[in-house]
Image 1 (cartoon, rainbow, N blue to C red):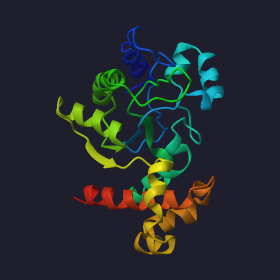
Image 2 (image 1 turned 120 degrees about the horizontal axis):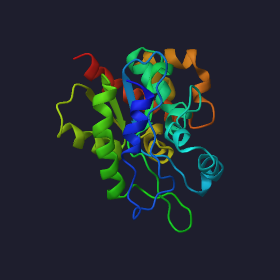
Image 3 (image 1 turned 90 degrees about the horizontal axis):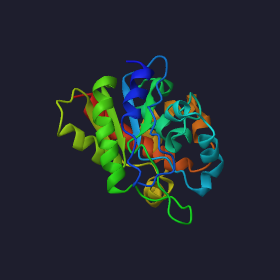
Image 4 (image 1 turned 180 degrees about the vertical axis):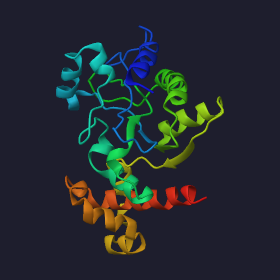
Amino acid sequence: MTNELLIEICRNHLPPNNIDVVIRESYIPYFPINWNEILVLAESQNLSNSNLKYVENLKGLSSTDRLCRLRGPINIGVQPWDDGSLKLAVEASFGKKAENTAVSNAILWSQVDQSGNNKSPSNDLITLSINLWNDLLPIIKPQYIITCGNYARQVIKTINQKVQASWKIIQLRLPSRTAMSRISNMFPEKDLLYRYPEVKEVIQKHPEWLEGGYRQNKIFFACHAVSVIKSIVDQ
């Protein structure tokens, strides 16, 4: 597998002109040098006016650079990964370094409304993304695909119904701040870390992943991930 091949596949899946998207190019996943064969998929990039500086930067890049916009290893361009939520969850669940994980979004285009606010992915974008991932995944050949949220789950589930899949799918909640804040305080941090020592161990190694606020959300989500992932990996 080479980035050049993935880029070429993405070029063959540009949206038709009647579908309004912020950036016409999709993007290939971020792959670290020592990939652990785990692919994590969040939902979609927020290219609304709240991220205008990032959008303007993308528009100033070449088409190829936009296709390779997910950079690493620290800030990739996938928010729940960059804020530490998914890094903590992956490393605690697999016992492998999160830095060796491939990262992307399931929906590979973004839309905004007339006021520049982020829009939920339309059915058109979901279909376009399914078709693109259907061509990408047989080339990528991950061992595990972790889907975060309903859109990611829908995309990968649809593909699995079409192909003879060799990967294992792990379905997690989306670690969005709104969703996690509603439930993360149901259990005290001390109790969560007692019951999930894998999470506590990773926090001790990477306390920086809890910086930037929403500490309880990140811990709660990581415990959710350990519970779900270990039941699948240990089968």
